[in-house]
Length: 300
Image 1 (cartoon, rainbow, N blue to C red):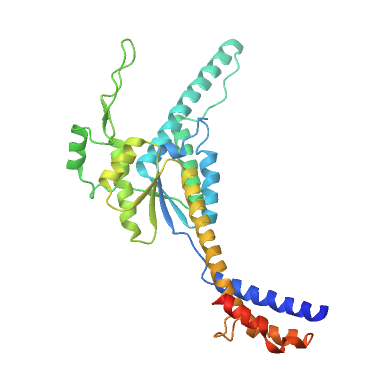
Image 2 (cartoon, one colour):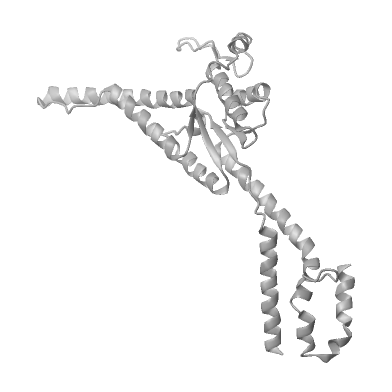
């Protein structure tokens, strides 16, 4: 009797494994995404950091869930390089001044420093090397496709992402009277990426700029998923995968009884594994099949 039960258990386990393979044969896959990033998505509070470690690590996790392609607009690359070059220029000037001071008080010549041009080239190379390693693409400005007249009108009437900048307080440095041109161009980059996808990938814009988000909704007709950060996008992917897993579990639970016993299906576990025949060899009272009828009624 124990050996017979063991045999039945083995057959049921094999059948269950076959069922799992059948259900998972068509493996669920998240959509592919084209992710366009704003400068604030790459920003790090520490000036010497090229790209936020949070962004790089989270991007790697996104790649584990589905296919994601990173797009960096030309103007975003330029702005990030400008931020880094500005900091490098300040550091280089301080280093030069420090060397001059040491030489003045010790007559020891200061060590040669790289030129500002060399530093700028080095920063650009580091950024491009990172982008290439991430499988990213720099989106060039689509000059011939841009509706420059529309941009001019948006700038005149301060339509998002253009806005009036606050006036400088008395005694403080005067600020620009308006801003938004850079963000308006980002919309053109996003449209370029969305149109090029041709339905193969979903477009995503990662920016925490509220005005830019509003402008995207107004100017981009293609479907675009807008996220405040790369971490928010990653959570979106996790949620989508989790929802699918729950639905899959519900479908399996609903179909499990019929997979075990279906009087019209000779391939069901009960019939294909010869469960009754095995049990009959240990208990002749099963010849009348009373419990088989109960299973059938339960299934119905």
